[in-house]
Amino acid sequence: MKDRRVPGNLSRRNFLQKSALASSTAALTFQFEEQALLAQQSQLPPASAGTQPARSFPHGKLGKLAVSRLICGGNLISGFAHSRDLIYVSSLLKNYFTDEKVFETLAVCEAHGVNTAILRLDDDTIRILGNYRKQHGSKIQWIAQVQIKEDDLTPLQRAIDNGAAAAYVHGGVGDAMVEKGKVEVLGKAIDLIKKNGVVAGIAGHSIEVVKACERAKLSPDFYMKTFNSKRYWSAGPMPRHDSVWEETPEETKSLMEEVDRPWIAYKVLGAGAIHPREGFQYAYQSGADFLCVGMFDFQVAEDVELAQLALEKSRSRSRPWCA
Image (cartoon, rainbow, N blue to C red):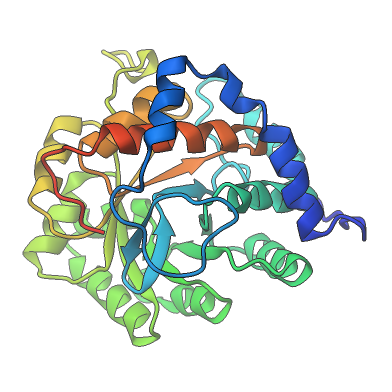
């Protein structure tokens, strides 16, 4: 990422004012019915106690943390995209998300009540978060996505030492450990995170990760599991035109109904192939407690409105809220 200094007059207050002005027209795009629902919207389930963000948004508990039910995902910020056959997308993202633009994106999230971001552990994340917090007094919570090895859990300690409020084992690593029959490594990771007083999670693309952890009686504070309807053209039927990260949505839904731990759903929009209006509703209604969604700064206002609508419409669902 390019390291660009933020002008001295671009304070946190200016960020939030700019964010509010930039997004003030977003609500005009919604239908009258949706506006009526928003007017009646009450927090569901109850918001956790704690400092209120600039704008109220429903919260839940991850361990000791009060976390907004919509979480800012970090793949876009880090320049990663499931871009199908568009070979320039990752380069475009890396050039778009300068330090200043990352600051602005996080500020827009905070202004709209999104108080948590899931970002990968790397040098850029540590540097940018440190500068953002120092320059703008931000208290945004960092959930660190961490890659570990069987014989090396030190990246988890690095995330914790650099201010992660929660940490979890990367989904690809979770898949690999379970496939190799090394679920005990995931258990050691959870123990290390919790020993440091930090909220601990395990992620996986495969439902076998959740099954294996539950069979082994591991005790993560939360699971991250990919989830979407798989109703988008590039997901198939064969031949597929993209990496499909949720092969069994109905089985995932059924499995998670039996799991009494908070669930953060990710890949809920199929890499931008599913409209948030449908993707958010499907995930919340099917049992997800939180959604991790990669968002450009100009998408945040609309995504927040649609997430609130989806929560309102998901008052009645078969899986109890676990957070």
